[in-house]
Length: 165
Image (tube, rainbow, N blue to C red; front, side, top):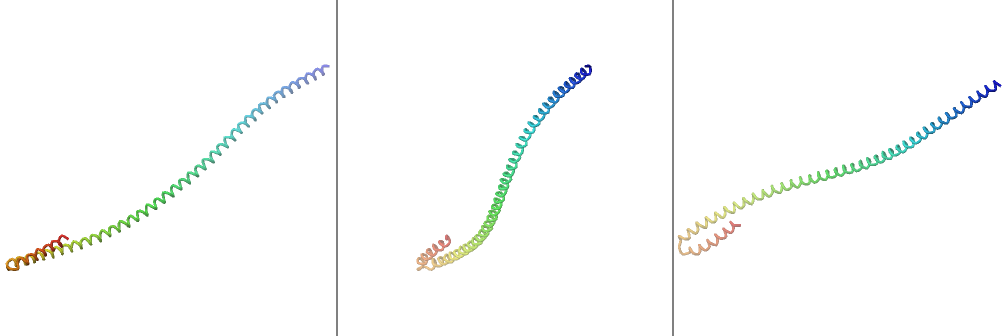
């Protein structure tokens, strides 16, 4: 009977230990489940965050590509404007050279016209002097002086008209 009591006591201790182990195992399982659940939630949160970061990265890359394309377009437009401006400048330089040539030609023509005008004035002065001398001679000669004087005045008017021209 003592052995039975000892066996019962040992069995009861074993059962209590087993019950304590089961409670401890359940506590460990519950804690493990909580940790797994927390890790799963954290993993889900990290997945969502990673997905958001990847979407943001993709959007940023697309924006950077669009900005690069726009900037490239602007650079190309600026290059075209620069080429157009250079062409305009070359045309302006050609026009300026042509204008300078025309001005030189006009100055040459003007100098020629001035020389012709000077010659015409000298010729008119010579005629005027000759007519004045003729008129003086006619005044001394007498009878035909009035006729020559009228011719002289007509010729003098023509000379003055030439000079005015």
